Image (cartoon, rainbow, N blue to C red; front, top):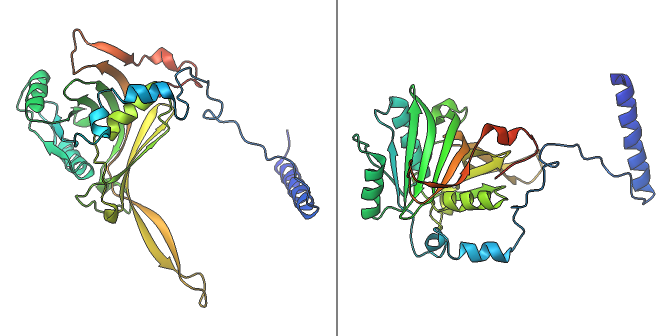
Length: 288
């Protein structure tokens, strides 16, 4: 095993070889790429290729086609589990800033199927039910109307704006949307479902961005504002415009538990996906 001194000497030797090769106009040794779980991921048969004709044909006729064809604008009903806590109301207040197209509806002890029926009759396009246990927000049931699908997520690592250092204050404006690494058929379907919650004509002047980033089947949500500032490097240098991000909150992580065809049906529902712990015995296999 090499000591720290030997490692440093070897690193300097490699750097000198690269510099010498560049001076001679010769291509230096290829830089080694470290192995990660992401770049050694097992190839999945459901991975989507760019401009896949089968996927495009399915998208043209799926439950979200009317949204992507701009025939329907998002109209989301937000509600909670029974007896929501103060934390839940604080969280919902921030989610209403993220989703300007959302309306809060008090649960009032109604069964979920009655809420779905009411929302469909009132012209809502989606129902989002946030669940909590022991005053901790821990779940999201997302139902697309009128015909589904229904996704159940576990929520973890929730932080409200006040818990985020240096956070900004969100404006009630339509944010831009970023979806990263929804690469399989299942991921593509989830991405379309999440996209249908947001307006397709964001207010760019607000500079607000909502991001869903999938990594190892965990979907990280962040809400930012990008800020442009003029900075000078020296006394005589001309000012340069630099961009930085300011997190607005909330932040949380989603883990898909199930995806069901149609609206919520706990007894006879047909499932497209159900998460089981044994699925991740192989650490290099992912489903989203």
